Image 1: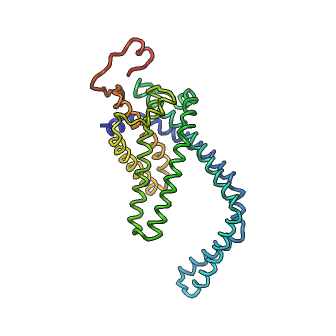
Image 2: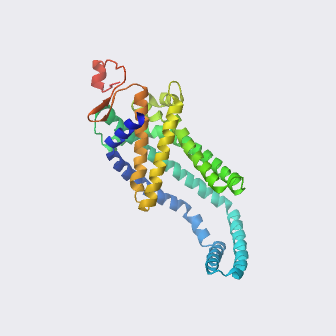
Image 3: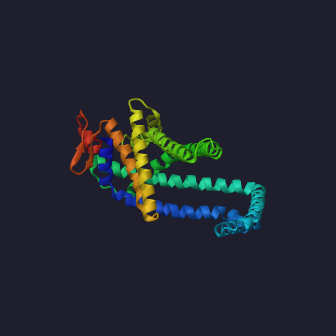
Length: 323
């Protein structure tokens, strides 16, 4: 039933997808420019280096001779490419400090970009929650500004934890690829299968343990400290059920995005990527409402009610707190 209710909530709030799209496009353009400005001095010097130009020209000549079928010429070009590659690696080693600094700058830009994107996700969750609880059509930007302080603090905690988790997972995946694929422990296709399995499980695992954070802040009004404790507490949360739901959602989202990329030359991603965030937020809220047995709207004509409804007091009614 959670999937059914999530889909209905997603459709009922589909207009939020376009607002997410515009917000993320602005962020992407701004931070892409900042990232390019940060690494351009280092990358520009590499592009202009004789070592890289020699390597690129050698690879180009190698491919041309390979296409022509000139086997004898390939041997000489192969030696030149190997020598040029060795010289380029040596160049990188001599500029290791600049390389590390450029990498750290890019990481910092990435974290700040994720922080701004997280504020948009918070606003998305607040807008959807208002629709589910009160059928209120809250404006995206107005909601973002209204909740800016809470969203900023939330992302100040969540984003570093998320980035740290992502770095650990990426490092583990690179180690997996190196030792099991390049060392030929596993065949390539089986290695790719296990690689994607790790990706799906890692994403679903993170979402399972953080899915209650936003709903607890926005709907539960628990505050930063209590919502943080609440999301990592697994008491009566049916963790495996939530995890399995996230596995299916992640697989569906990945399939839709890959299909959109291949069939529309990437244009469809403008819609499917922001829609992915909206449907994930919708599931988090539906999961929270169902578990806490709170009544909510999935559309203007349908209300999902708990098995036992608590009587609403006069004070709760005027505050809009309809738990």
